[in-house]
Length: 311
Image 1 (tube, rainbow, N blue to C red):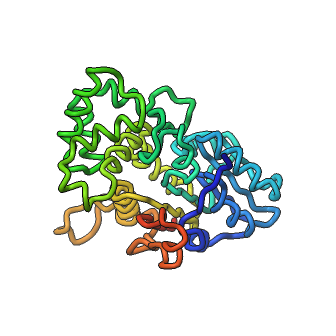
Image 2: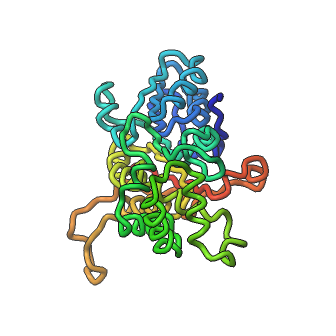
Image 3: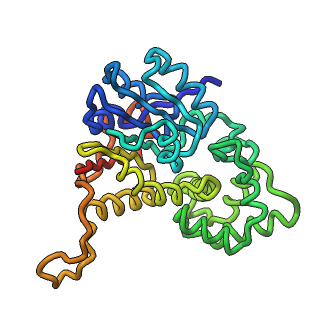
């Protein structure tokens, strides 16, 4: 299957970067190279672009898509949490812009055997980087009932988390849960029918929770953002697209703290903590997809773009 992914908030993200033609730009979630292509189009021969992704299929697709830009493009297979060290290996310590599009790509969702979608019966995998050993199957079959409850509650924000975790543990006692279809059926049986009618697909929240746990998505985001802000040159910007409230909350909180890091009590007349702002939040409210975009790409529905500029 060809790697296909509709880049969400494309125009808004590229404009938000405020691109300098001779700047250095990084896309930490390269995907099929949609955002990357538009960034590279605005660079001159002195500009450079580094694309990072942990998915081998994304690397292959983006390499082909960006081949026209020649040596100004460098593509690395890695997790964006290693951005600082991987760029350091290239002799780069400061950049002019960073993009993160935190969604699962259309390719990953539509390639059934990757196990990301609850709409197709496939092996329980969900690894964004197929080199890692932990899979969704391991989580579903080996995590304790309490740990399953915790991740479904915290990462899926599902009010039936306790019941779903209990039913998963009961089901796996009869034999391992191998596929997304098996898991979906267990989840259906865990949620009262009257709540299933108007709440979307019953497995959506649990599958999201297991995927987040499998790929350490929130942990990686939380642990990487401060480093990325530090890596920006003065005037450099970071644009982050999130797809659920947990990610958005992390981005909003870290941007806010970077803009106002003062820890002094509000009763102090002047700041004495010595914490200096690293930049300013450009988006007081997140940028959302236009009506037009929602029409041609329904998967953009929950997307939010936040932008931060280094000072």
